[in-house]
Length: 390
Image (cartoon, rainbow, N blue to C red):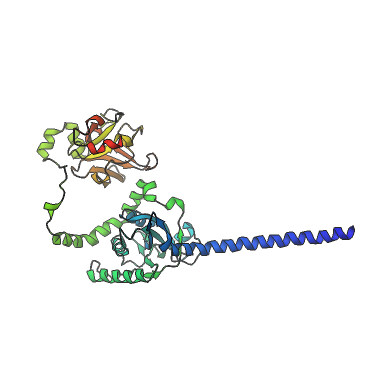
């Protein structure tokens, strides 16, 4: 009996120890496999990621702060998603804190998932050049260090050739008076950044706009490309006769003065602000749309109106975003985002990032800048296409 007990005392710990070692080895192997699979999946996704019957392709770019490059590319037709992350370094699965210190070799980058039937890699390259300073070897704009360097990571030989060709074309264009230093590098890895960095320009619109304006990015790009854009505009054939004419127009100043009340004129033409809780539409709950008081262009829908408690009409999003223009407003000793109508250039109000989900936005608008068209009058007044939303 003692012998059997002794045998069990020897065998059981041995089995437990062997089992634990096997488990630990298996866990470590799985962890290593995950790291390898991450890079493998990213590489193979160029051919394997699908949407419906269409295959998406991947492009990887670094252009400084990934909040900005992600925002720029997600506006491109044919781009299904742009993901912020880290690329070009040596450390496995780095954190933002590690990368931002500059010791991992990574740079802030984005992966662009795009439909090649809608937008080509060549076109993405052109967009990339238009949104960075390719002459800066030490970072991008206000962000300094190799962790903010610009770089093109090619996934295959076709991308490599197109990237080199595109870079040469940029050099020949003489847009910049300094050498183009953006490197073209073989893609090795990409690590997705933390969740709070993804779609930052949507989640924290106010903070993002404040940062972007302060970085000097847009000011630099506008100055760098202004002459090129003007030359292209001059060379463009005059085909206005074949273009669709907008039904909205801005009357003369004399007509505007005659049409508007003193308050409406003060707010729309002189950037004024009406009193909260004592304006026409702050508490309006009727179904319909809100149009520009000057031009009539459709701006907002009652479906997107919400109670903000501010005393002004508040909307989570525009009805027609192309009729809205956002501008930086530096009055009142702070930076805000002003909202204006595109055609009439009427001052409407301001945009804030404290609205309800899913947009997280609050378009705080002056009633005096708007005219409400109730649902039952939409067709009669020429807005019948919006009946379907009610």
